[in-house]
Image: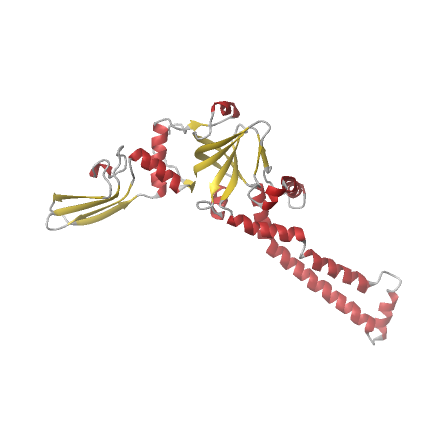
Length: 331
């Protein structure tokens, strides 16, 4: 949990599992009031409707206006001489801030900082940790390939067109009726045949655009967008690694861009503690990673040291590490 700070403590969730958050808050509140409408009529009757269920803890701003534990809508009439109409509604982020306040005030969050705490943890515990967001190395590589390919394809198309034009000019020179051009073409006969060389280059360019490796990665880049969950890596300042299993319903490419190369806080439930001889494969959500993790490791090593020199994490996460089902990733 965070240390007290002066002023408001306002958490902004970049990723938020709304279903998990609402279920936790509803349990603590005895239900959740998310919307309130109030209409005051000139005749002197004020009608107030509370949608949802009133809270037991009554920290929601309008929870005191309804009977604790009542379900459905509650209507109350009071005399007044004013006429007005107002509506208030909670957002997912505001409800998360309320739940976060509950959890910190009641000391329900284990402040996870280093590997020395792992022996005392168990699956199902609620933890909070802070660390650097490292993402998923395979997804980062596939995203880079997918973004780069249109430019690569455009360059290859231009090279093929230039080679085809040079090949056509060489062939015309050999067949030319112009003595000077024919003499120049004959002078090259002792050297490697220019037409054959250009034809070979053209063939290589043609084959490179349909290279199986590139096509495979492009297909994987499409498939990765359809998986129901994603594995993301966060590392604390002490080196403890946490694999976050996030839901695709609340996680998108935009979310990943917000998180990229930043330090964030995480609240979630532990689902696995990585033992000394165990590891988590961050590429396990793809057929390639599930079938051959070494192939993914080689791919990562190549992009780290090759032409692109991408700064991506290791796809195999070993001890000390935990796996967490996150409720929120926030700042």
